Structure formats: C-alpha cells, structure tokens
Image 1 (tube, rainbow, N blue to C red):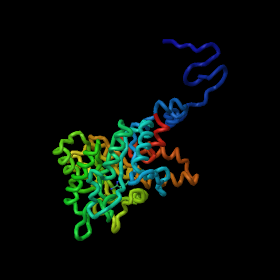
Image 2 (image 1 turned 90 degrees about the vertical axis):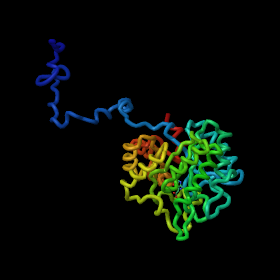
Image 3 (image 1 turned 90 degrees about the horizontal axis):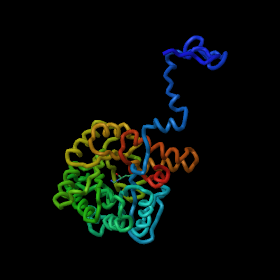
Image 4 (image 1 turned 120 degrees about the vertical axis):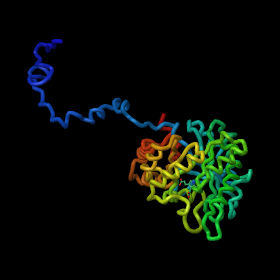
Amino acid sequence: MNYSPPPGMGPAFGPGHTHGPGEELPPLPPEYLVKRPRRLRSHPQLRRLVRETHLTRDDLLLPLFVVEGTNVRDEVKSMPGVYRESLDKLGETVKKVEQLGIPGVMLFGIPATKDPEGRSAWSPEGIVQRALEQVERSAPSLLRVADLCFCEYTDHGHCGVLTDAGDVDNDATLENLELQALALADAGAQVVAPSGMMDGMIGSIRTALDEAGYFDVSILSYAVKYASGFYGPFRDAADSAPAFGDRSTYQMDPANAIEAMRELELDLEQGADMVMVKPAMPYLDILRAVKDRAKVPVCAYQVSGEYAMIKAAGSKGWIDEQRVMLESLLSIKRAGADFMLTYFAREVAKLVP
Ligand code: PBG
C-alpha cells in the first residue's frame, strides 16, 4: 500500500521524517534504548492494567486473642491495635470483622489456669472452645479457624508435655494434640491449625478427626515454622513465652531451606489441606519455594514482630505506615501466599476491594 504523507509533512519513518511542518525528529535512539520499560509506567491507568498482583479482602485471615472474664479489652503493649478480649467483647469484634468482608478469624486463647500438660486445651469449657461458640453465635458467616498448640496452656510455656530431661516429648504430645483437635471440632472449628512443629502431628490429628466423623474439618498446617525472634510480641499477647530454654528443638533453624521442603513433603503426605510458612517477610524465599512445590493452598503468617516493627516505625513517623503495611502484604502475596494471617487485616480490608 502506498502511503503518502499529508501535505507539508515528510515521510512517516526514517530520514526526512518530521513531526510537523518543517520540524526535524531527533535521531533514532541506540539499540539498547528501543526497549523502554518506563513506557508502561507512564500513565496511572496503564499501570493498573499491567499490575500483576492485587490485594483483596479474600486474602485475609485475622488472628484474635481471647481471655477469661467479662468486659475485658486490653491492648497488647507491643502490638498497638491488637487486643486481648473477653468473650462478650469478642462477640462485638467479630460482628465488625464480618461486616468488613474478612473471610475468617484464627483464635488464640489465654486460659485462666495452666498446668504441665495444658489440660484446659481439650476441655469442652476451654477458652477457645467457648470463643468458637461465641463467634458462631455473633458472626455465623465467618470461617472459624483455631490454632492448635499447647504453649498458651502449659505452665512451662513449651508446645507440649516435657520429658524428664526437659525437652518436649513428641509422641506423648501427639496424643494431647488429638484430644485438643477433637475438642475444637466439637466446639465448631472448621479449620484447625497445628502450630507446634511436632513430627507426625498432621497424620495423628487427621486420623483422630476422621475417626470421630469430622471429615470436613480442614487442617491448615504450620508446616514450615521457624524458631524466630519475630514472635516476641505474640508471647506477650498470649502469655506463652517458654519459662526456660527456647523452641529450637522443635521449631526450624532460620538458616535452613532444604529442610523446609522436607517438612512440607511430610505434612502433605500426612494429609495437610493447606500449609503455612511463618514468619512471612523474612522468609519470602521459602514461601516461593513452597508455592512452587505444594499443590495445596499456601498461607503466610505475617507475625507479631513484623506487625510491631511497622507500627513502631510508623508511629515515630519514620515510615509511611499505611503504605508499608500494604507493600509488605503485597510482597508476601507476590512471593506465593494464597492468603495471609495478619494483624493488619481490618485496616487492609477498609482499603482494598
Ligand atoms: C503457638 C504460636 C506462636 C505464634 C503462633 N502460634 C508462638 C510461638 O511459636 O512461640 C506466633 C504468632 C506471632 O508471632 O504473631 N505455637
């Protein structure tokens, strides 16, 4: 086809081409500047079209802390905006969470009394059991997820029963985890989330649930959970700091990535329906590796220390808190999380579709 330029204009391309009458075009850029990624950033609507990752309310699960008593709503000092609430206050809170369009809550309980085994964890009157019933009454459409572990319930603060030598007895703890799982399912938990890093815990819990007919109760395994300093503020919130030693004989060494793949594989073999990586932001490489291998949904837990750092720097005016909050969660999602446990869930839900 013959193209003839309008009168007064030179050829459309190449030498002699002009913008308008008489105006010479700048010379063609060198080869390496023909491809310019900035072009796609040049307009806000174009940036919207090419954006790869989006945060939505569908990504969010909110952790909540429940205590005994009535009319209690104490803010956790190291976690501004996070409260320890009694059951009556919890009822009000979850109604608001439901209205915000957040899919569900994960419950942590602080019991009135603790003992070496953590027996209140499997009592029908246990704090989380009653909290599950409260959530069902107050906000029936919310998904009820319960953390499944003993550190909040034992007087020594470790995640199971102890051997004479003071280490956590793996296999004896499994039996108690089964009891706790059944108590949580009896109280209406739809998902249980074992976080104690005991070997074989997923298989034991699955078998116990199935034998009791709870085929539809899902297991969200804290499959890859590191022995992390980032849990500090949570232990204040949940009264769950170990009385002696640390958790390095059961939680993973932060230096290890291959071992994380082994933990993942074992939990999938044992029937985990969903798997979690925890903490989130310091372990984005692990999250990506898990996402690439697991054919089940992957969750990431943006833990208390991650939250506290953003809140603290934000309150000092050192960072733009809202911007960093959204960026941190976006990065976790981009790295492979299908959904996220975050103390920011309510704040985020107000800002995203
Ligand atoms: C209980 C548990 C912990 C967290 C979740 N479940 C604490 C721990 O392992 O010491 C930490 C959550 C957070 O830091 O936000 N095993």
